[in-house]
Amino acid sequence: MNIQRKRKAKVDPVGSEVSDSTLPQNDDAAVRHYVVESYGCQMNVHDAERLAGLLEAAGYAPAPSTADADVVVVNTCSVRERAEEKLFTRLGELRDEARSRQRQRVVAVAGCVAQQEGENIRRRSKDVDVVIGTQAAGRLPGLLDEALTRAAEGRRRPPVIDINPYEDVSFPIGMARRQDPVKAYVTIIEGCNDFCAFCVVPYTRGHERMRPVTAILEEVAEAVGSGRREIHLLGQIVNHYQAPDDPACDFAALLERVASVPGVDRIRFASPHPRHVTARLIVALRDIPQVCKHIHLPVQSGSTRVLTAMRRRHTREEYLALVDRLRESVPDVALSTDLIVGFPGETPAEFDETLSLVERVGYHSVFSFKYSPRPNTLASKRMADDAPEHEKTRRIVALQSLQREIQRRIFDTMVGHSFEVLVDAPSRRRPHELSGRTTGNTVVNLPGHSAWVGRLTRVRVARVGPNSVWGQAVAVEQGTRHRLEPVDPVEAVTAAGESHDD
Ligand code: SF4
Image (tube, rainbow, N blue to C red; front, side, top):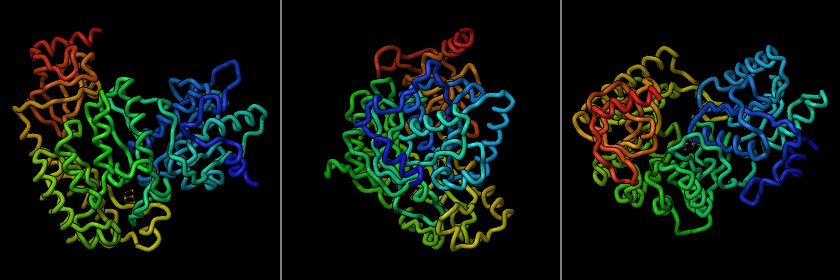
């Protein structure tokens, strides 16, 4: 019997039925410290929050850096190019750091690369103690316990591995260690059944599994109860949601129910699939005040022939018709998308169709990628990666340059107007400033007091930058939620100085 099956038999399933007492407890007097490193999308970041919560429930405490950690969890993402190589480079850095500090510690690899590579990690690296797949995250404390016991006995390797495809999607409410004081990620669907030709997700996250609406609403209530105002619903195809515990609850109904939880001020979701955008969802986007007027609508290519080769199940024409329907119902809706350039067989003329689609839609933002084959995918097995690297570079440069122009045009229309902004953090670049987002997801920087983080403000936009706009607050929530009281813009600058002096 291999270790994976033994662990599966011994460890209780993850779920709301798991109480803290069923999680392995650290019985050493000295508390062990952990770091979870996250490398990917919002789903990956939220997985890291969950892993951190599981570790704290098992008695670990956060360490300020990897140098101080007894346990380092590398939570990998396999969507980007060379993800596997980056993992092994990082493992080498961690090994060197541990050696230079003469510190014994345990390293776990989690996330999509762990799921995908499994035994390969054991073969390629001597620096790993635990490999844990995306569907086995709840087993992390138990596997670490095993690895720590081995380490204490001086018999460290080979690593313990669990990449079994567990069905359970439940997670103890309130256990995730949320990093953001304003926004909360809430997973509603795990996995995907679509198998787009380029995408590794169905292989790393398994088939689609829906979370019960009761658990989702309980988690939303917990998140707002702990101060979060903006809920991000997460799933690979978020708008394919159908509650397993309520046949009447599709994704549009879920939005209504989340909006009805007291304290939810904003709702965002990622990512919907164009072919599952229903009339009911468009109405929900239009009519539910808490649902942000932004939709991330991945298109991947502007050419119907390439979309067919990608197995996307929507055409250029259908996509553009959907954009028209959205704009008709919600005229101020902001759109963003994902695009791949240099997919196998994409001709220069087909790439030009992508440019014309981008121009026609006028996206607020675009996430663009050069195609690279991902392990196990249909494209990697059956299609030649035939666009030379310099041609992929030419295409992505042209695409990004067009998108910069479009974004600039959109930003220019905002100057002189004021927008409601939820302030979510201090500005990353300027210590005296804050950063927030409009309902359309535009990043707005503004001078202001650090106490404004988490408050709604009204900001008049004065100028634009390459990726954000800049303005001054004209009104801020001062005590009562949703009641914005005027502030003098000059005072706002003074307040920024005060916050710096603090
Ligand atoms: S819909 Fe396609 S691109 Fe999105 S996660 Fe599923 S397989 Fe990947």
